Image (tube, rainbow over all chains, first blue to last red; front, side, top):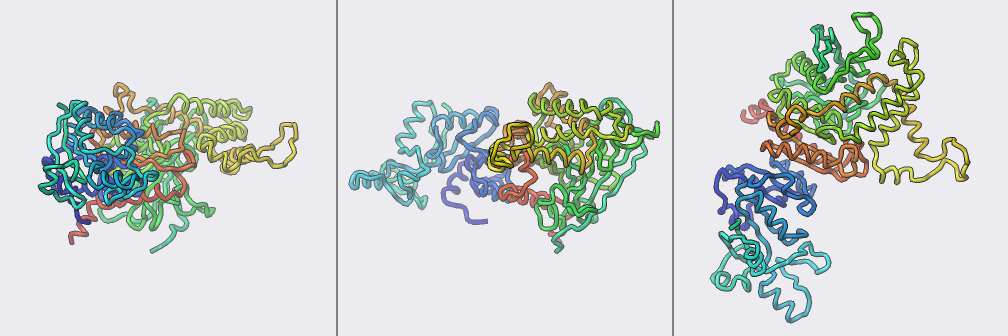
Amino acid sequence: MSQLTPEFKLISEWITPNSRVLDLGCGDGQLLKHLIDTYNVTGYGMEIDPHKNIQAIEKGLNVIQSDLNSHDLADYFDPNSFDYIIMTQALQVVSRPDQLLEDMLTIGKQIIVTFPNFGHWRNRAQLLLTGRMPQTDTLPYHWFDTPNIHMCTFKDFETLCEDKNIEIIARTVVNTEHRSSLGMRIAPNWLGEVALYKVQKK
Amino acid sequence: MAQTLGVITPQVMQVETPLTLSSGAVLPRYDLTYETYGQLNEDASNAILVCHALSGDHHVAGLDADNKPGWWDSYIGPGKPVDTNHFFVVCSNNLGGCRGSTGPASLNPETGKVYGPDFPIATCKDWVNSQYELQKHLKIPQWAALIGGSMGGMQVLQWAMDYPDQLRHALVIAAAPKLSAQNIAFNVVARRAIMSDPDFHEGRFLEHNTTPKQGLAQARMLGHLTYLSDDLMGTKFGRERREDALKYNYEVEFQIESYLNYQGEKFATKQNFDANTYLLMTKALDYFDPAAEFDHDLSKALACATAKFLVVSFTSDWRFSPERSHEIVKALLDNDTDVCYAEITSEHGHDAFLLPNEHYEGIFRAYMKRVLKDIPSQHDETKK
């Protein structure tokens, strides 16, 4: 098995053993497989990409091929079906992140999401100095071909949580190597590149 | 490693104990014709049962006596997703069929005449019960997997509910938990076509030394339509005509017309499918509704299932659309059952489940590896 990314390691630390997990946009299932093997969790993955689906099935995972945009999660799952719903680096690619968050909070007790911070100083500087949409290691795409159609800053996300009565239980802000620094803790919205949030309904 | 299965000889299980059917009717005795591929391992733990679709039969892989490949030969054989180098694969012709198993065209032992319309309607449940006899006959303690497409997929669901301990995996492909009104309507028209053929003779056509070819051909043409997608028919035939100039009469002009005529003709004459079997199979499909006994709650119906599931649907299949498979997946999820679901992009409509497709094959192959891993003796071998 390939090595676990630092982001996945950080997420794993937030999972209680023997819990029930749904991994939205589970890719080839690396994280879910790790959680099953290490924390004895049970649950399902959802993924739209056919090739990643095949890889996840080969890992012995329960994976449901599904488009997070077209499928109402509530069609498949009853309220409070899961202890955790994990969605890594997918919030910014779905058509209505706010509605998906609501669905997730209905069927899961706690939500773990990760996403890139558009408010990072490099993005701000590029836009300010070049007048063009930023291209960085975290956001390598052009404006016209990016899958990231709903970019937000940490502040934006936290405002959305406030508006929707969502409680932020934990937050970790890291750089692309998934390391945290004093600076990131003092000025996360300037210095943090990727955020991991654990939230629940208030 | 052998690359082909070669010519396969069908076998017959003769059951001399009476079988009570869902209808209450009793079959005094019956035959099930089946084929097998690959080798049964020492503890008989690598056996797979394949269930066929409406007009299918036991010849699922390899070649028959006429060198005709089986209907799922693309997916079953040495090195194929259902790898006969590892699995012992069994496929039987359903009770009521016309390819060797006892059905309407068989002799009624009580009268010495052909059953014809007197053959009792067998249901999906009855098929499963008779296949359970085959399982015992072959001395298979538990199937490694049950696999079926379309009607066969429904039969797999029925197995998982009626004999939950007898299978470890259930592969339900291009199926539905029950027929919709539209599905039933197509069957109604097909039956009407057969039954209104002047050669039908109220089902006693064999006694009249004839068959309702026209009706059967029409039924097949209609069925065939529902297996294809609009897009595919558009690409394959479009509005093409055999001749450029319009004839202004009712002779065959459009290519789709000629294609459908050919399909109907082939089914009714060359393949010699029994019209009463067609009636019986469509009726069994109409009746299939396992949730009915559970307050029409499929989740309750599947609560007893202990097998792990793979559910597969195809995007352009409008006969049993992906939404119908979602219903099955939803019911399995409600029970926290182990389930994988794949929605294969294909333009081939319902027929897609029989045809080569990279994604489909990848999913099928990956899942069968899991079935292989779950074979108890395989684990023991790797431990040694």
